[in-house]
Image (cartoon, rainbow, N blue to C red; front, side, top):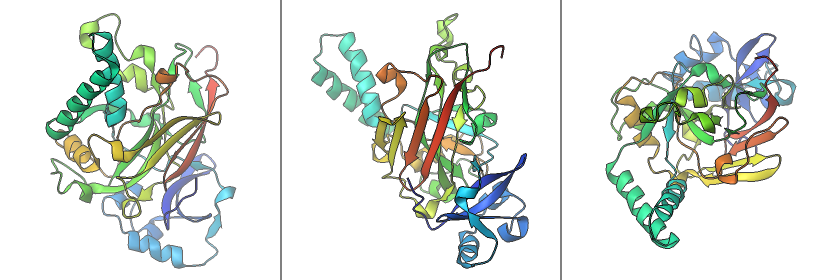
Length: 319
């Protein structure tokens, strides 16, 4: 899927290091502190000057190179990663309806109607459900996804990720979008049999063990500026070995981007460059009863944000 925006930010490999780059069409050029006008990416995102970058795109100098000639990596370096659960209306309705059908004599239609009312009530009067991830899990799709040997039920969750701009602390919903710098793609990998604690069920979920193995947040390839993105109508699509598994749209979000930024910022300040994941639509491996295996290839795309290709490998023996 092509990058539709006039330009975007990316990071690309330069030996052992990664350089910040400006992408326009099929070209990329390195951004140093002088051309960026900031000390680093997060400093720039705190007060993004998109006009400055647009002027660089208009120049036709020898600083540009073919995008195909570089290796892209994760486009962001977040200090915090926040994740949102149960945020796609139709997905959650189906999950709740399945439980209602199993535990009562309701018909599937009655269960879905009851679940839909519950979700609409939650959207109107409830709050988003957040948990935290580890920034160290953020990698580019240039890094193979090593599937830990301690489980055979590693799952995919393609998500739109908000990239925070100006610091947000207790932001209102009305002002929340002023704190969004841009968007990127994240595949939130989850080990399903570790989500719920078996040794002490009263504790509930264990998101640390279930979601934070090395490389469990493949991110990118681009950071697309917010002015170029219609966040309320983006198609999300994940293919596993060429077969479509997830096919959703952000129009189905229970809590929109403004509600998520506002809600997440009530507890802790969101810093420039932080990631806020927005939830995943239906079609996870748990639904298909098919989980990730050695040799699998996942292609995740979001309208206008490009596509990432993640290759799965078995974890090395002895790790």
